[in-house]
Length: 76
Image 1 (cartoon, rainbow, N blue to C red):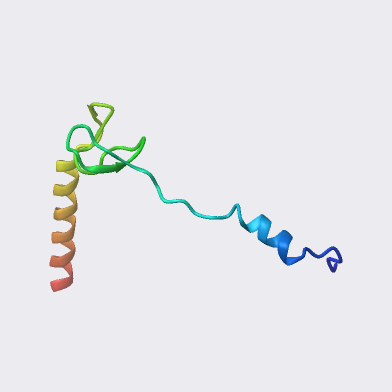
Image 2: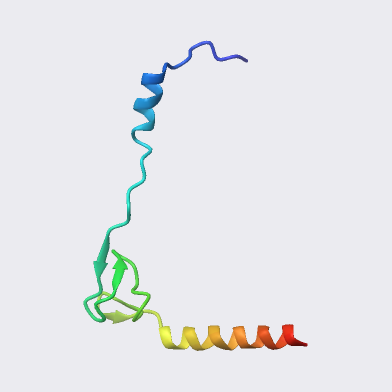
């Protein structure tokens, strides 16, 4: 089926004016003073709303252990 009701450039432009992207607003973590996205856990200290939600130290240790195992497997 062919669309006979075409939109002119002005109407297409008015529609696309609402498709613009906006930059995320950053806030400052009250504990470590690092920049973070609002309403998200801080990636630097793992706290949200004054409570520790993510154990960042354990996460980094696990990641390093995994990378070390992968590099050892590739060396063989």
